[in-house]
Image 1: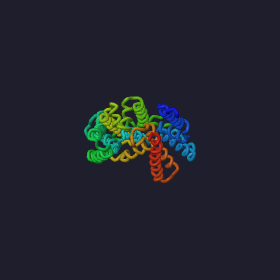
Image 2: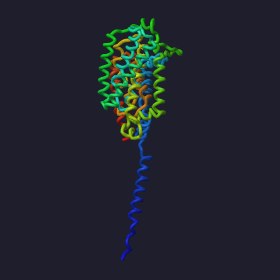
Image 3: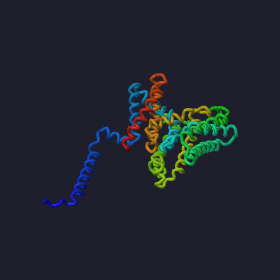
Image 4: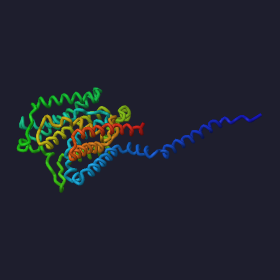
Length: 360
């Protein structure tokens, strides 16, 4: 008669199989990734890498086609001047999109703030410095209203900001009576309104204070988003608001602060816009909302929220600037610029979906 099998054997066999299986999975995860998968992981951990690569390639291609004149200090700083307003508004848009929202009212808020600065100075005779502060307050107030409607009333950001865009746009035209304040009048009475349009020459390079402000703003926001609790909470809210709430983040307060700051940055863009065009025009910057979203999307910031870098946004804005100026210097039809930018937008979203599979 054979001896009975030990009762502990099946258990030990199960542990042995489980241990070997875990080792095999670990070995697969660490050693069996293809170069393409490693590259995919790299892009997932460095979201600004894709737009940076595209920007470098764009510069190289136009540099080869156009020769040395494209790489002159004047040409490269001209690109920076052209994207300064988009870069500032794009910074506001980035903050909102990182929370999985979107702000269609950024352009209208920018223009209304600039109109308030001009009208308060020339219609009411207020000191220009105080008028600028009033314009900044109007921009922040518009953003605050957006934040309240999104955070407290739980309305979809797309609908809220679409409605705010229409309201602010109409208010802008009604308040200004579609009147443009001329550059000559501003130069004589309120030169501070044109502050961001003043030039700083460094050899052949021509930098405006608007460009310098854009660079400093992006650098400051990059630091805040990556090295402060507020910045980490922005990403957490965009990634999973319910999990962020459970972790102790006040999601409503965060959203209100983000939309308010976005409105304030748009108002600063309105001040910079006066410096850029020299006048106060209620019809300027009408496509700033679309241009800012374009810069954000091409910059690799996920429209689903919680992933991306504000540096990618500035690279995205520069890519559009390089294509616009490069194609103009070649002498092609301007419609080619829109066509290529459209291709870039769709490609950027497709790449973002592909990169997101790493986290899936």
